Image (cartoon, rainbow, N blue to C red):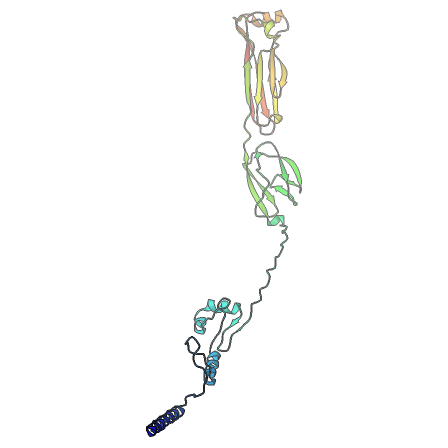
Length: 300
């Protein structure tokens, strides 16, 4: 029985030596380093060979923080000029060597305060002096707000920062010039004056001369755009009283006595009449108009 056990021991020992030799020939590691964790997972083990492979991999790898930088393919840069300019502006150099990323320097924008340019009046694009209203045949007043003379071509020149009154004729427009800039202004026409004669007193064949010669018989009103340049004249046996601007009250003043009345009415039939006229002239425009009316009476 003991011999059988010795034989089995020798056989097992021989098999063990054989397995160890085979494993050794294959290059396996026969140390007693633990290869499993306590929970059964394989234990991490780094050999010199695996470490060298990791280093070689790192040399050809590009590690970039994608939250801050981006990698752009060189071929794409060659094809896209705008992209290439953008990369150059951000100063990111791309090469096969490890990236050397330089933060672009951002220059603070310079705020330039431009002084308001003072324009030469000769360089003005447009003359602006408000709504210019000028009339024909009258005195017009114009203000020059500029620092250079203002010329109403062919009529007058207004010094800088001043006002001047000048007279116009029958031109339909005038040219206003400041420096090298000019503006044409149309002139409004000067209308003819108007005469209105209103009868105030009652007049018929029963009206007495003494009544008409002691009361206001007519009121004459003259209207015009420029009443100050009008010349008003009355003609006839009347007394004229100024009742306001270009308003006149008319009283008959035809007979100084009854004999004068009798001489006037001799060989005439009642009712009798005598008239008066009013003439209005525009001293600048040359307009001239005439109005007339008559007194009616029948007795002294």
